[in-house]
Image (cartoon, rainbow, N blue to C red; front, side):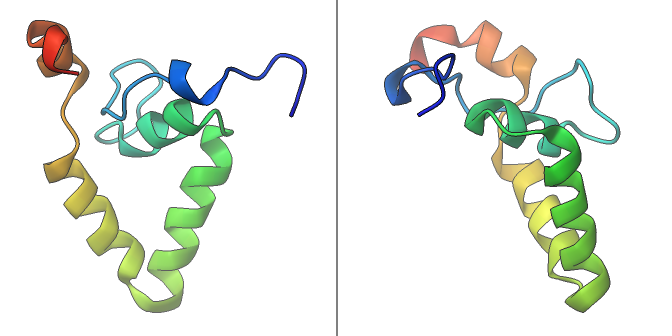
Length: 79
């Protein structure tokens, strides 16, 4: 592992973020949770959309399923 990588158990929760979002914060939330580059996550979603349309469906499902940052802050103990 990288020397500055966080241990698995200290990852931030999977949630849609407000800072750095373009549409709903899904890609930024996935990137922050997995410590990935947000641009690469966006390219992956765009590629999946262009190739067969699955990227758009996955994005909408994640938009519905992932809690927002505000929701997690309000109900913090549950996450």
